[in-house]
Amino acid sequence: MTAPLTDYSRLCIHTMTTKPWSLRESVDGYTKAGVPGVTVWRQHLDPGGPAEAAKILQGSGLRVVSLCRGGFFPAETATGRQANIEDNMRAIDEAAMIGAPLVVLVCGAIPKFSLEESRKQITEGIAAVLPHAEAAGVRLAIEPLHPMYADDRSAVNTLEQANDMAATLASPWVGVTVDVYHLWWDPHLEREIRRAGKNIFSFHVCDWRTPTRDLLNDRGLMGEGCIKIRQIRGWVEATGYEGPIEVEIFSSEFWSGDQTELVDRIKGAYLTHC
Image (cartoon, rainbow, N blue to C red; front, side, top):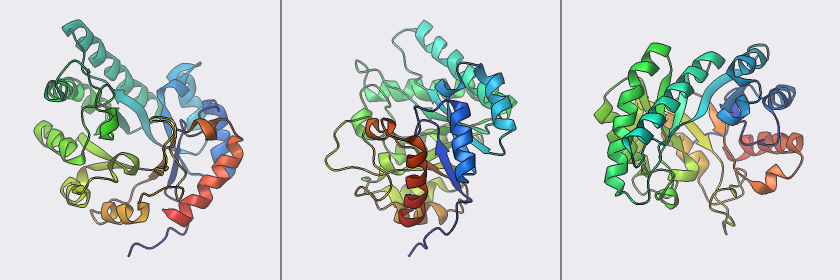
């Protein structure tokens, strides 16, 4: 039985969770609430860009856990694929500038392609940016997405597929992200978490609402749904993972409310349900 969390030392919040806040507002809100970690979404680097974001973050005392997101490698043309590779190199540079040791990859898919073709282009794309990532000292985490996104957001839909891809690339700079929202349903999840082992670079939490009112923007606060979050955390920690527990919630409902109140609710749900 996995023991409850007793403090906030591993808590990290994604800036997308408090989407209405700017990066500076997020940093101020998290630090005031005693949240020690932040994962920055690329759109929150604007309007000042990564250099200004780095200044905001470096003076905050927050641990910068990762940058979201890279990926979306597949394209219908060679020119498009090259443009995607170059965008991922920019993401790696941005991560290095803000002090993020990791870029999370939402890998992409093209509806007119077979899933196998999309996965082939994803593997080739990661291989193409890998030397750049290594030179920058930034790791890459392949994040499998729920199969409902297999048409155009990610052809990597199970942890087994992500593990296979990481094994093919065979680099200490490439690992996986375990996100309970995307993987809770998988009957092979415990096995594949064990297989991933030290290749688990990040761990994301939220909950699955029933009914789900929107396929993208209706995630629940931990404890509002059916995911056995604490059990999955136990499986992840059995591999030796002791890193941040990242709260990543896409929710039109929460974005329309008071973000300071949301952060307080996250803290309560984190201790109670994670």
